[in-house]
Image (cartoon, rainbow, N blue to C red; front, side, top):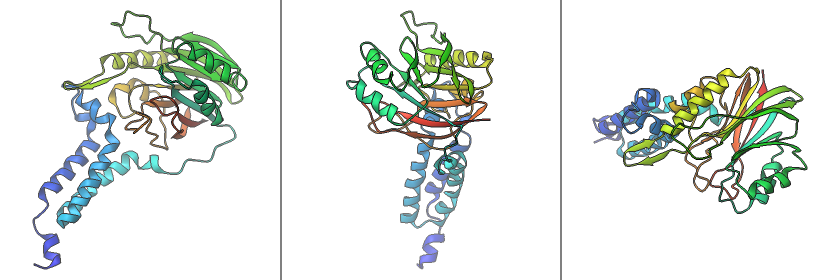
Length: 314
């Protein structure tokens, strides 16, 4: 059999079918139901990794010498590029009026809060949002950051450090109904920046769990809805949300947030877990502004990687 005949024969139908299924999952992930084990949210949490499925299928198609499979692989390639290709483009130049922010879940088990605080400040941000602030580390962060970030607000286990004055600070009620313990993981404040006043929200949504029954996310989903209501009621035009949202921007459970705020246009910035990041659950979103670039910083003593973003205002 000639090489051409080997490539154009009927082989590779299973690979071609897998390529079509991959393309369908990328293009119509919203159609995957959440009622059984949260399958839709689970898929959307790791949606970019379907690109790895494409890579495996590509290798197998070449080994199999299947023109049919290679042609079918154009479908998931186009779908993935449409969804995520823009994130791989070079970041825009930092504008004179851009706001640089850092978001980091510092971990309540972090044994090096001084080193973590210095690493975050070393990125030169205007604002630093932190979650899982617990004593005595909370006081260490305050002391280490005080010189460069004289303005701060802490509510429960979340806090914001700023180079600019803050006012109107208050806690956010994003506590799920079935949590009876003390639980304060959200705040709202106004940063008076040279670019104008910005309402800054810092939030740490409840964790999700993946088990044999699927994705357990009811608390996270409820908390996201409450946060979305708070954002909808915000009167200031410029809004910034920084937080460990325990969900990706593709996850439908964060629709109360992503429907109201712009998400990053550049950078995959996978942030969790720090040792081998699989998903970006640390987010920076903006209203009346563009999150032009998002990237991770080197690992600290946390199980999350810090993310740094530049935000330009409309």
